[in-house]
Image (cartoon, rainbow, N blue to C red; front, side, top):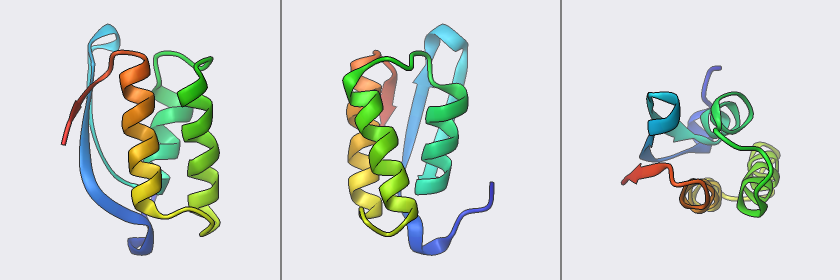
Length: 84
C-alpha cells in the first residue's frame, strides 16, 4: 500500500514474537494494513480503538500522531514489543 506523505509519522518498530515478525510502520496506511492483516489478536478494546483512529486518520479526522499513539497502545495490549 502506497503511503501519503501527509499521513506519515515517526517510525514505530513492532516485534510480534508469536508470529515471528518484525515490522516498521511509518504511516496511517501502514498502520491500517498491520492492524487488519497481521495483528495477533482482533478482539481487544485498544485494538478496536486503534482501527477506528486509523480510519479517522485516513479521512483526516485524526492526526498521524494520534494514530501512532493508538497503535502503540494496542501493541502493549497484546504484548507486541514496541521500538520507538
